Image 1 (tube, rainbow over the protein chains, first blue to last red):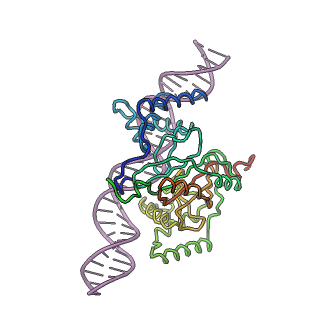
Image 2 (image 1 turned 180 degrees about the vertical axis):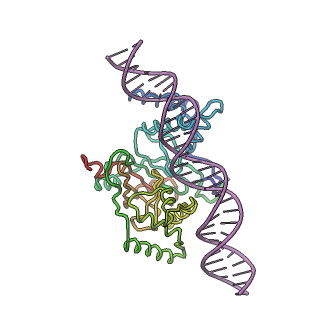
Image 3 (image 1 turned 45 degrees about the vertical axis):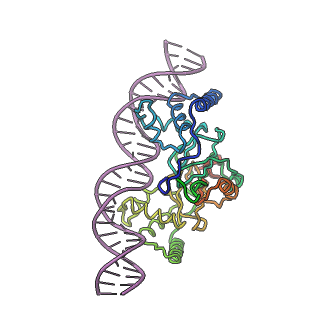
Length: 163
Length: 163
DNA sequence: ACACCTCCTGTTATGAGATAACATAACCGG
DNA sequence: CCGGTTATGTTATCTCATAACAGGAGGTGT
């Protein structure tokens, strides 16, 4: 992850300014619609995720939490992440121990990522889980969440050479 | 996991006696065929995985490592697990921080699991990754490994009530 | 047999990731 | 304004994983 080559981080731009405010506002709306509360620490963690252009570790968020450099206490951030995941605003990438904001639509408990082992980018994509769900049903499972993590090298990092 | 109800653990029987020896022998063969060495600690960790009927945590393996109750040192087991994963003898289940022996065929860097949040069973199945690989290729990725983890409730734990 | 390289193991220590437990405060319905 | 519920603050600790370095085992060429 970034140890192997020096391509630029991430592919998602990372929101700022009005785009960021708009996204936060939309989250606020969705919470209001379901009796959920986007409280200050939850909003702050979502903001940090949206601003970033790569998967964020929990302790990165803890360190960046305070507006003036004071870190948060771990449970503050872990609770916020739990909330954001529950509502579909964020996903945990298990194989990285890291978190990303949902880039698809939110609300879903399905997530699929293409993760570059070189630059660390994690692209969320809309997967086709038809076959998996059929297999699960056949086995008698009631599936609640599906996560798919495909690792390899992204287009930029596969290219001959660059910067 | 197992906190929610009291269904019996796992669905894989856990090998013993001659079945266990046969599986270990087969692993030995496959290693010999590729210039790899199934050394004592590696063999021991594989044995522990094969004997068990549910995903094993690294520190469970560390505790069970010694024949007479003496634990191993963490790196001993983590190195063995790394080897076993590399050769396809074992898989790590990211969302559980736990390990299982490969139940499919070995050698593959693809794995898919149906994980029961109730009894902790983790059934490996052979997934159809056609759509995912197409998406990855379209995005320019060179995929090396794919992991899919579907969580929910297994047939037994979905049933009305039992034990 | 010897020197050499490579891979693997043993050991100590520490780093990273996550949660338990309990006290306090904010929100909301009656 | 009271009481339930939900969220937060805080301390401490637990689980998971790896860095770093020394030593041993197994091959290869001479």
